[in-house]
Image (cartoon, rainbow, N blue to C red; front, side):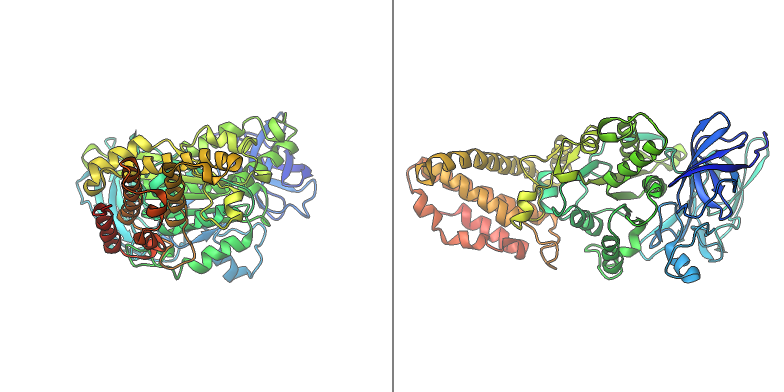
Length: 585
């Protein structure tokens, strides 16, 4: 092996440090910079010089200080203890740092991400003599009250188990020993490391075919995302991107949530930290923090660590996916990540692309989102399991301009587009997701899902399509109303406008801060939509048969029951549907 020779600092430009005399160094290798041993990563090599992206504040560094090569790529530690933890962008444990160093993050601190002293109760699943391959689960640890941590055989190891035992172990103690066909023995511990820039291995990528229920009506019913899907939420300042992300993190029907605060305001991460330990999941009754990993790289933290934070988060998410869990990753926001790429690209004096972003912006975004998916996890053929990783990224275009490079590059790779609109937000309609500009390319998958897996909701997508048609008709009719007035419309057109108003106000509008309205189960969403469309069909049929006019239909007493319908139970909605079916004129 070539000996690595340490170098010294030649030049400092903010988070970029130029070092010289580093021999046998590799791209993306981690180095320790200066006397403080700040963590950095090699991002460019030119002759005798290496460009280093430093993930900590470089104030006080001086030319001539040493640069120490580690020989390792930027990696995350994976093992019991990840759930409920909050890390910075390079997986330093913020809570532990606070206990030991106070309220300010020390520079150059060496804090292991996983506690080395805590003992975990390991329960073996396999026995001595069993044959295993990479990815097979050999035992379990109860990490929280709702998450069982699966201990997997590390990549590159296969053979026969020659020792394994139950008991209490630290993450660095041997829980099993595996002997391969060449009689080589490997010790298996509960701690693994994985380079963040390399996707974790799996056997096969599958078609996402199961709805990720979020409890948000506009998402589940109109623009659904399956488990293993990708989505983006672009919108201007104040339109509710972060609130939507928080709602998804709270109520999405997944096993584990990884939430990345990438360059956003610190108070937004504070909201998560304050709420999640107290809010309870509707299904399990357990607090949300017991299924959450938080990555905090807020706007006042080093800008270059934003770039690392999204890779740190998605590698942790892939690790839990490989256990067979359904994972949702929230990245808020990828625009701040792209800004970090732009700053580092500028300091590296690279040729700028559109609006100063590096030419490889689209490639980096695609690489990130392509790590999502539903997969058959790495394992032996007789121990197959499936896991999924859904990635939802917020995008913060300047001035809400959806034609800017980050939004356009994101739209090329994601399949769900939830477009937030300032006009809706200013009119107090939340979630401010535009039903005219948003889309989901998973509609066909979801139609099969409802027909094959939800017997009592097989026609859900038919009602959804009818509602979308009515909203589009409303948009066209508004132009006519502005030109020649409401009185010029036919009775049928007026019914369209009345129904569209009901869809918007009685269904799409949802109060995230109301204890009851914040989450709506899927069956109730279906029933409300069915009630609205059923009344519309009855009214249209009545007008077509000249049995009543718009004035009569608009004064129906049951219309009042649609007000606050989302605050009623399912039985109320079912009885309302029966009333509509028995209407007689």
